Length: 104
Length: 140
Image 1 (tube, helix red, strand yellow):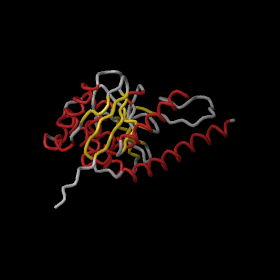
Image 2 (spheres, rainbow over the protein chains, first blue to last red; image 1 turned 120 degrees about the vertical axis):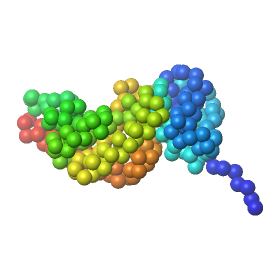
Image 3 (cartoon, chains in turn red, green; image 1 turned 45 degrees about the horizontal axis):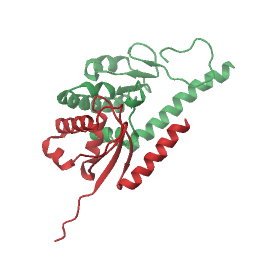
Image 4 (tube, helix red, strand yellow; image 1 turned 60 degrees about the horizontal axis):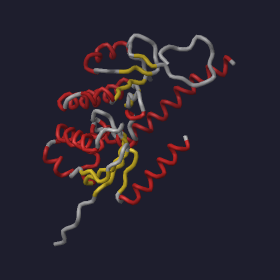
């Protein structure tokens, strides 16, 4: 039997400058509070790329809805600006977003 | 806006209030269970009942669970009383804004189908705003 790799999603997150570790921990904590420890492990929320205001995290596709709920309900608030199945596509979208922000 | 403008205006507007007794397009609900009885007596058909996500950020896990239950109850109430259910971010800064997929995820968690929510929301908004714009056009 073939063991297929789990599908994942990369999420780009804009935050107000707090450290990436702190908001990833806040997401994991909120997720655990709302959906339980087993679901938290299944979600496999990890920090992929750290930036001053923008960071990228990844999670398993099967838990994406719940991860989005947890992201929405953390304090201090963060904004999800993009979501993709590949990190290259997500980076392209972030670039477009920053160009749009500069043009404003 | 918190009150209807006294003079004519040439832009669409919606009146938002937290007071159930006041005439408004949108009523902001903080705790549905507390105002349920009052709402049943005083609410007008077609009014928008808004619940914001912002206060839930500061709550602990258990209270967030209750908040979700309130959200579901408000949706059911809106259905039965022919009011418009509105889920808003309650944002006061750009960092508090919520993206579409996140709002959809919250709706799905509350057993609300996002597609039907956005469809009815669009219809309601168009109808409400056109009413206020026509008032402004007449006055011009």
